[in-house]
Length: 114
Image 1 (cartoon, rainbow, N blue to C red):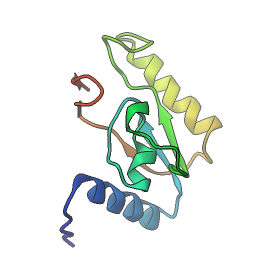
Image 2: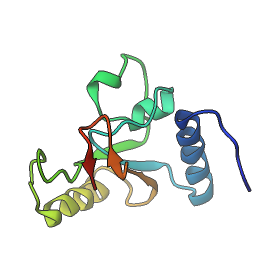
Image 3: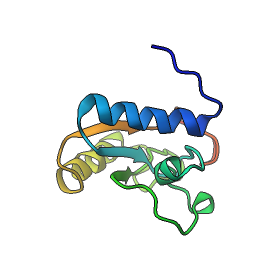
Image 4: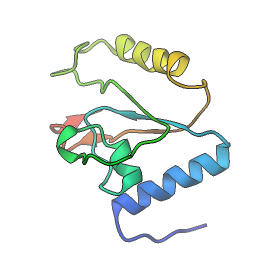
């Protein structure tokens, strides 16, 4: 199927819905410091304080560390970032997730190539 949408926010909202319906799972992982949109669903995915409003958002969304070799807490240690994801899966979710959201090149988060 092909779905035409009018914005990135709407595309991400649709991706959340499709992932949850297809997998039957509710939890979603997203990287910190990423921007995914300004709808209520995508604002929850966004892990950047300057793009958040004081409204209910992000139900079932869990943020993990962004593997930023320049400003990230673990530097260039990919294993430490992977451990953060593993820890979130084991302690913050049921262990079953519907989706993982990441920007391949972060723009709002400081032009970091992953």
